[in-house]
Every structure is written in structure tokens, then in C-alpha cells.
Image 1 (cartoon, rainbow, N blue to C red):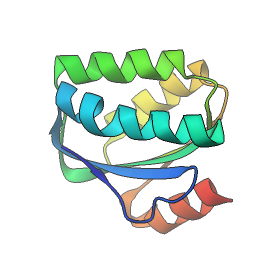
Image 2: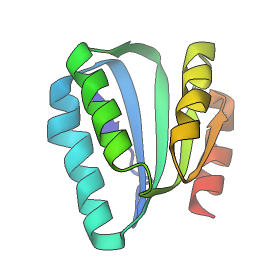
Image 3: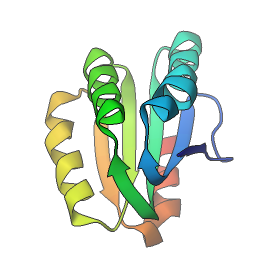
Length: 120
């Protein structure tokens, strides 16, 4: 499940990944919200929080993530990824090489720092 975080405003979108992300999460929640922001502001600033009970992506969701990310690789000014999982930190850093905007990773106890950086 993807939850839109209440701190989201303007061109800053924050979401939390809970349990296992599905194709439906991307097509009905995340992608429409991102497209709305891109249409209105041209660029997006994004905070993705992976909750402690995050269990990865279903295959369709992983494909949606990769496809949207590659087709909009120049549309993100900043992306903050918040997680204590090493594999998420590692995969985020690898994917950062394919994006034009800035990308940083944060531990869960640094969530406020992630928001501050993304909004600055």
C-alpha cells in the first residue's frame, strides 16, 4: 500500500510504502498524483518513506516504478529515500545514476532532515 503523507504540499510529495507495493498502488495512487504535480509545477520533489513493515514490490509494481522513473528521470528536483534497510539504500544509490535531480538517503530517525532537505 502507498499512503500519501500529510506533509505533502505544492510540488513536494511524500509517500509511505507499507507492506508490499502493488501495480494498483502505482496506477491508482502514486502515478496519478505525480502526474498531477508534474503538470502543475513541471518538477517534483519527492520523499519516499519505507515503513518498518515494508516487504517490497510485486512484479507489476516494480515494472511501473522502473517505467515511470525512466520516462520522468529529468522531472525530479530532489528525491529523499527514508529507510533503515541496506538493500533500499544501495538500490537507491544505483538508480540515482540514471536521474538528473539530487537524490539522498536517510535513516528513519532522520525523517525530519529528509523533509527539510527536500523542501529547501
